[in-house]
Amino acid sequence: MAVVKAHHLQATGLALWGLVLLRASSDGRLDLLLREVFHPLVGLAGLILMSWAAALVLPGRSSSMGGPATPGQWRLGAATAAIALLLIGLPPNPSFADLAQQRASDDSGEAELAFVLPPAQRSLTDWVRLLRTQSDPRLYVGDPVRISGFVLPRRDGPPVLARLLVRCCLADATPVGLSVRWPTNQPLPRADQWLQIDGDMAVQQGPQGDELVVIPQRITPIRRPARPLEP
Amino acid sequence: MSTAWALFQGLLIEALPFLLIGVLISSLTRWLAPGGRWLRRLPGHPVLGPLSGAALGFALPACECGNVPVARRLLVAGAPLGTALGFLFAAPVLNPIVIAGTWAAFPDRPWLLLARPLGAVLVSLALCLLLRLIPEAELLQSDVLAERRLNQPLSAVTLLQRRSGIVGIRAAMATDPDADPGRKATPDPASRPPLQEVLQHGGREFLQLAVLLVAGCMLAALVQTLLPRQWLLNLGGSPTGSIVALMVLSLVISVCSSVDAFLALSFAAQVTPGALLAFLLLGPVIDLKLAGLLSLLLRPKGLLLAMAGAALAVLLIAQWINLWLL
Image (cartoon, rainbow over all chains, first blue to last red; front, side, top):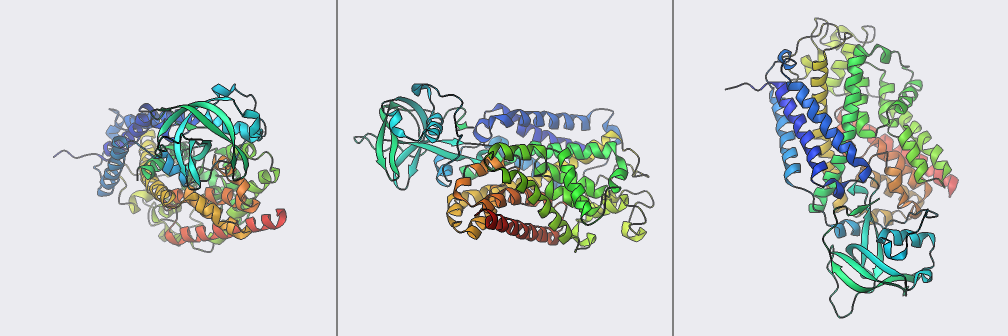
C-alpha cells in the first residue's frame, strides 16, 4: 500500500480550501453572501491557496520533505475534506424573510443624498434613503414607482416589500422596507416571495403619522435577482 | 436551518481571506526574520510591552482573524508576552482601516474616533496585566510554549524548561505528535529555514486555524439564527442593560472589526453611547468566531480569564462613557 506523505495531504487540504473559495467566486453564491467589494479578495485568496498547494507538491521541491502523514494530520485532512465538500455541494439558500424578521430595520442614512434619480428609476432602497433625507411623504404623492423586493411579513400590519442592506456579509444584513397597499381582492403574497411592483406613491395614516405607501397597478412575481443584497 | 447554513457560509468565506493574510504575514516573518531576534528586543515592561504590541497593529491592516496567526508567531519567536498579547487584543482596532471605517460611519460622533482606539488600548493593557497573573506554562498551549522557549535566550528559560533544542531537535517536533517526522532537524533556530519548510509550516497553520474558524462560524451562525437580534436590542432599555445587550450582540454577530462600525450604524440611534462603544470594543477582542482561533494560543484557563477580563473592562469603560455623555 502506498504511503501518503504529509505534504501531499497538506497540499490536498489547501487545494480544497482554494477550490471552495474559487467555486464560491464562480457560481454566484458570493452575490448572496458578501458585499461586492470583498469578492475579488475571495477569488485572490482561492488562487493563492491553489498556488500554495501546487508549490508543496512540485517535483524537485517536495523531494526533501518526505515523511508519512501522522494520525493527527489524517484527522485534520479528513475534517478539511468533509467541510470543503459540504461547502461545495450545498450552496446557500437563505430565507430573506426569516433573516429580516430577526433584525431591526436599518435606521441609518446619509444627511443628504449626492443625487436623486427620477422617481420611476428609483430602487426600493433609493426610496427609503430619500425618505430619510426628506421625511415629508406628501412631497412624493403621485410619483410613479417601479420597485422589486421580497415580501416581509410584519406582526403589526400587512407585509412590506423589503430589501436587505449588507455592510460586510449576510451576518450583518439589515432590512429596509416600503409599505404596500395590497389588492383586497387577492390573498396576501407569501413571505419571501420576490415581486416587482409598478404603481404610484400615496400617503396613508400610520402609527407615527403620515407614511408613504405604494399603490400597485401591476404586481409581477419574479425570480430572486442574481444580486439580491444592496450596499 | 437553510438560513443558518447561509450565515455560516457568509461568515466563513468572508473570514478565510483575512486568515490567509495573517498566515502569509506570519510565514513571511518566519522566513525573513528567523529566530525573531528583533522581536525579543521589544520592551518587556508590564505597561510598555502591551503598548508597543498595540502599536504594531498599525503595520497590519487586517481584522482579528488575521491577527491570530501573527500573534502566534510573535509568541513562538520569543517576543515578550505582554507585547504579543497587546498586539493580539488591541491590533484589531488599532489599525488604519478600522479607524478610517469608524470615522466614515460616525462623522457626527467625533468622540468615538478617540474613544474607540483609546478604549482598545485600555482593554488590551488590562488584559495583559491580568494574564500576567498566570504563569506562561499555564497560560499558553503546549506547542506554542515549547517553540517559544526554544527561541528564548537561556538567561530567560532553563534547559529543563526548554525540553528540547539543546541537541538540535526542533521544539515543535519534540512536542507536537502531528509534526512531520520527515522534516530535517534544524540545528540553529536563528538560521533562515528553507522556503519549502516555511510553506509547509504555514500550510499546516492555515489548515489548523481554518478548522477552528469553521467551528466558531458554525456556533455564531446557529446562535444568530436562534436568538433574534431585535430581542437583544429591546432588552437594552436602561443604560447598563443596553451596554450588556450590545456586548452580547457583539459576541454573537462575530463580524470583522473592519466593518463593525457600519453595522453599528444601523442601530446606533436605538442605544446609549456607552453601549455603542461597548459593541465596538468587545467584538474585536473576543467573539464566538474568534474563540476557536484563540484556543490555539491560550489554554482554557487563560481564555476564560481573557473573556471575563475583556467583558469587565469594556463594561466599566462603557459605563463611564454613559455617565459622561448621558
